[in-house]
Amino acid sequence: MHEMPNLITSEPILTKLGGKNPPINRTEVVQCFQNKSGKSLLDTREKHASNPPTQWFVAPTNAGRLLKVVYILRDGKVFLRSAFEPNADELYIYKQYG
Image (cartoon, rainbow, N blue to C red; front, side, top):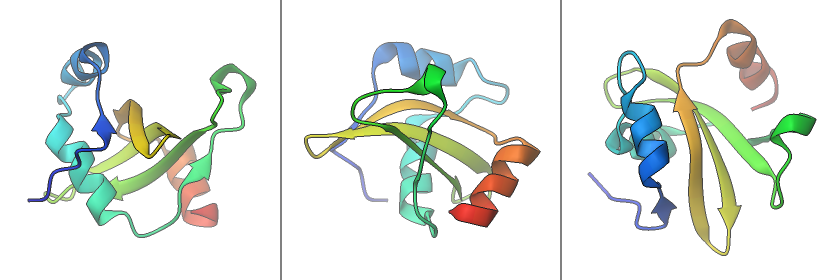
């Protein structure tokens, strides 16, 4: 498996992902980036506003688990903000626009 050296995952983010049920690990997030088939969408909600803007996509892990991956792209680095199993609305939005 190819690593993503430009993927920045802070300890608080890794701890948050590890607390999901079931837990999500960095390897699964990397797999989602590698398996992504659509484009990333911008999160335009005011409470999630950031500069540069927050982006997200939905993609499967190698085991077929769908995850919504949320990140910020800055200076050639990908800063992971979150990852979780998408709800029905998020899946619909991504299928329509991603």
